[in-house]
Image (cartoon, rainbow, N blue to C red; front, side):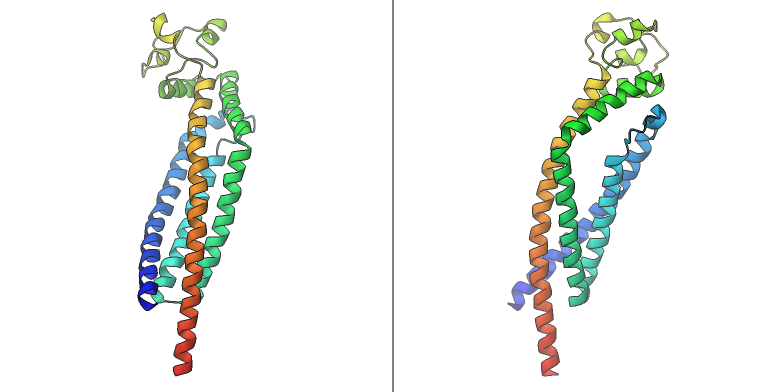
Length: 232
């Protein structure tokens, strides 16, 4: 039993070290996403594009704190700290389960908001942001290149893949074949939502397994501590 307990201690310690690093990376990633998406607020309609980055940042912070408790508790062989870690893992499991269910249930509404965001950018005449989308996603206009023709603006260079938006795209075969940015932006989030959903479900299962193992380890530590006190 002592050998098995030692193996479990070592495995949980390594897992928590890895998750400490993952927590830091998620915090950095969320911060970068917040910075990159900040220019979308120019539409000023109240649509919150920061929901996902904020969730990523908060999740990274929670993972960091929980993993720190796990590392410290296992290193010090503290039943109290390991018990606190077990409780935190359970809370994290509940939060991730709720978030994963929210993503499953509200997928269509979220994707609709992402497509509507591009419409709002176009309506607000934020052509700088549209240029970023056209360059990044290989699209043109809100729904198609015809959006530019309808308002009397020449097709910008970003619709032909040029970095300079001020230049004119004079190749109809290129920009006519490009879809609208609202459809491409929605497609981008649609693909990523699948990854987020199933990754979230996998993390929920992993958290549940860690919770059960940590609970057993905490109980083992308490039993050992009680035995030492009796012999003392």
